[in-house]
Length: 305
Image (cartoon, rainbow, N blue to C red; front, side):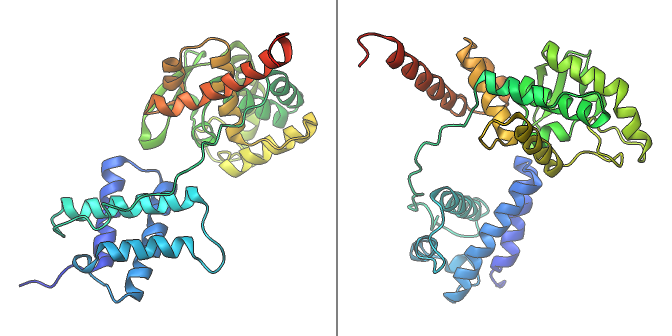
C-alpha cells in the first residue's frame, strides 16, 4: 500500500494541469498558486496534510477564515476568486481519483454586486487622444499606442505584446488574448495613420538604441514597452487632457465596447472584437448604454419626470 500523496505534490500537479489544459496566463497561474498556498496553510493548521483527509467542514473553515481575517475581510471579488480556485482544485482531485467525493461541492461564493464598466464619453476620449499629439518620437509612439487601444479594445497586455508582423495589410491587427486565443480586429483610419507615422518616424530611432526586437511598441532604450510603462503613458496623457478623472488602460477597452454598442453595433460582433468567450460578459456593456439612454430620456422628454 502506497502512502497518500501530499497536498504540496497534488497542488503542483493541479497547477501544471490548468496551465497546460487551459493555457492560463502567468498572472492567472500566480493567483491560483497564491490562493492554494493560503488554503494549504489553513489545512495544515488543522492537521491535514493529504487530500484524502479534507472534509466539507475544512473547506467551510477556510471560507470562514477569509471572512473573519484579523486585518479585515477580503473583498467579495477576491473571496469569490479564491473559493473558485479551491472548488476547481477539489474537482481535479475527484477527476484524478485522488479522493472519492468533492469536499467543496456545497461551497458557495459570495454574491457579487454587478460592477458596470467605467467608460468615458467620446468627447473625453478625443481630448485624451488629442493630448498625445506632438512630433517628437515619444509623442508619436504614445499616440499610436493610445489610438490602437481605443480602435481595437485590446487589453493593455495584448497591445504591448504585439509585434510588427501582427499588423496585417496595414488595416488589421492580430491580437492574442487569454489562453493565447487569436482574434483579428480592424484598425480605424485614425489608428492606422498614427501607427504609420510611428513606424516611419519614431520606431527606427527607438530600435537603433537597443538589440533587434520584433516588438511593435518600443521604449527609450529600444526594448519592448511594458504594461507598467503603458499605464504611465496613459496616466500622463490623461493629466495633459485635464479630464479631472483617473483613467486606466481598461478605460480604453470599456469605452471601445460602450461606444460601439451605443452606435448600433451588434453585441455578438462586439463579443468577437473583445475576445470574450461568453456573450454574457459583453452584455454587461449594454447596461451601460441603457443607463445613458435612460439619463438622456429623463433629461429631454417632457413627461419623463
